[in-house]
Amino acid sequence: MITYPFSKINIGLHIVGKRQDGFHNLETIFYPVGLQDALEIVESKEFHFMTNRPEMGSFKNNLVVKAYQLLKKDYNIPPVDIYLYKKIPTGAGLGGGSSDASHTILMLDKIFSLSISNEKKKKYALSLGSDCPFFLENRPVFASGRGEITEEISLNLNNYYIILVLPNVSVSTKEAYEHISVQKEKNSLKELIQLPPKKWKGKITNQFEKYVFDKYTEAGKIKQTLYDQGACFALMSGSGSSFYGIFKKKQKNIDSWFPENYHTFQQKLEY
Image 1 (cartoon, rainbow, N blue to C red):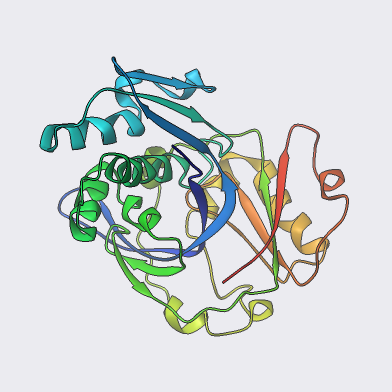
Image 2: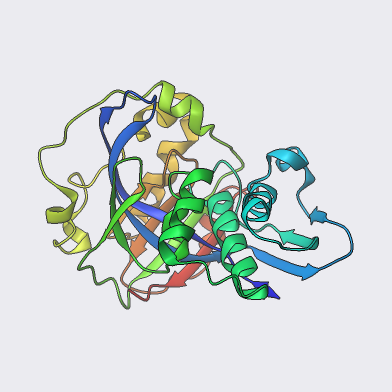
């Protein structure tokens, strides 16, 4: 069986408090994007995990492997062959690893008819990462807490286009959080998201941008280029290093806007 784990952008990312467990409370809008990995799982005589990106980390630390081991503790599932083809870059703030893990849970449940409840799937996913539960459902949500508390929102970006810009830079989420300071925003994202995208600039913010801009001088240039090319709104996703711009029309020759070692992705939005 093959599935295609999707990525996400953050429309706004506010750190609103430090938790006693060492995590941070945040507020953000998770919005699904069509840049996808490919994940194949088939029953096998022995467990194997293969990927086109072996530099992603050790076998044992991969979230896909952890997801399989997590379910195997509670269910009598056999060994499998897992092949993960990565297109979503790591360290880009797009949630690729979390999406892969959550889709592993969904696939194992379906392949072996485990009949895991939605609530239990969310608990498994949360144990793997704060944003993992989001990837169990393909829809925009307002997220709070560590990112695990989600609620439906009224948001219509249908017929807008998004351009993702993926520089050849990886930002450590752990390091980014170590440099973040809690800053309460004046307006709630739930209220701001009701404005048209052309009015989001300067109001919807990502508090990680300052750290990333200070460390990587080219980051600020990416955002400015998106605005120079006519974006209604542009922002960094997650803790970086990817940026996105929202446009009213499909754009041409976008690769010419950026250095050759950058990658771009364009999609018509659906929600």
